[in-house]
Image (cartoon, rainbow, N blue to C red):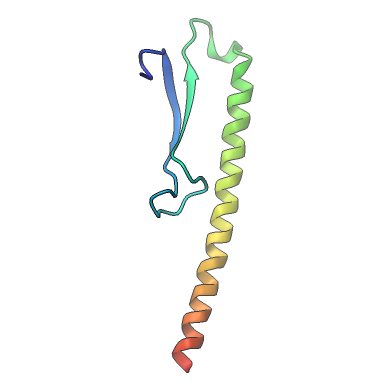
Length: 83
C-alpha cells in the first residue's frame, strides 16, 4: 500500500501498546509523498522537519522520565531490602 501510494517511510516508531517502553501508544509511521521536484524545494519539507524535531524532543523527554523512574525503582528496592 505504501509503495502503491508513492510514499516513502521517513521514520517508524514502535508503540507501547504491547508493553514495550515508548513515547507513543500505537506504532507510528512517518511517511512522505514522493515528488518529481527537488525535495529541498518542497514546502512540505519544513513540516516534516518540524515533526521530526518534535518527535526527537518527545524522545528526550521520555528518556528523562524513564531515568527518573528507574532511580525511584532502585530507591524503593533498596528501601524494601533494608526491611
